[in-house]
Length: 359
Image (tube, rainbow, N blue to C red; front, side, top):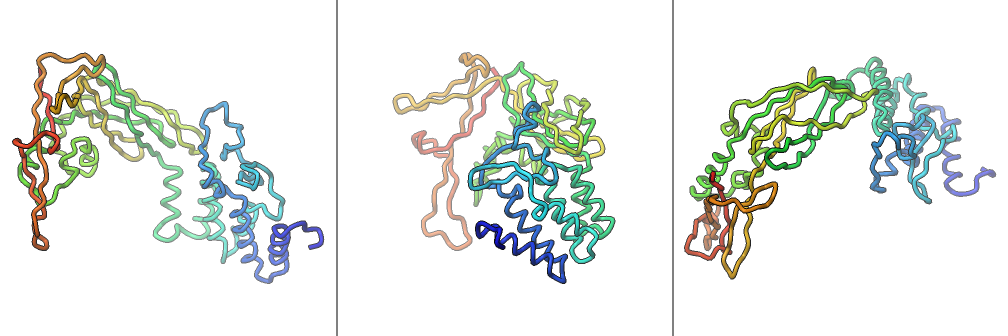
């Protein structure tokens, strides 16, 4: 204790001595590992708001967790983010590893070690520890370990948000995947005219309570995912496959997939990872945009070319105005408002749905 210069050093010395002298050394080692991890683990970065730099040239930066050696840590200290090697007595990964064969604390240490490596983006090491833990102690509660192993070694993919592009330009979808080498894609046009017609029909029916998803055409993607709008899907227009080059060590790979489409419309894109999962998204290609402006107390609408912005002559716009009117003194569990189409009221008292007809 005489060599300790502050309370922190004295506390860590006490924990180390407790571990050394205790008859139940496994418990003390596990608690010391937990404490050391809480002080020097990647969890200390959670309030820092940092992001990993995925540029290859920056792979050796101090914030690259996947380059950490087992005796290194990246932690938030009193003077900022620091990367340094831990003293042997506080090397929490080594402490967890020393417990893997202990019948009482081996399962806990194995699970903790897996989470450490996953937090470091070192999935190859997480896989190694997880397979050993499963072999010794089983699949875990509700097969949690088995399911986690599948997440690491399985073929997975997902789309990011796609940008809307003008007609004539092929959309590109952000794709993140793991371990996969091939993906099959199918593009199907969504009948948005029918979607908009059903929105108007729904509002005209004066629903007791308005379902926002049914009056928001932009939410059609979620309705399709929930399998509530399959009637709007037309026959597949294109099917193709793309070869993928995954990163090693089960690391995620990010790329972009160009769609062989240029026809305007909402395209429902279905993807199947070979030997893995399936997922879907919506890609928009637009040939026109509808603009509105308040001119001398009246609403002016016009249709413009989506790419150049020039007005489109001869375009016709169908408008449907509606509003909800509260019912005075409604009875319990009864209707609280009516949905009406008050064409005699000023435009600013209504909400509007619009359909641009072909020109």
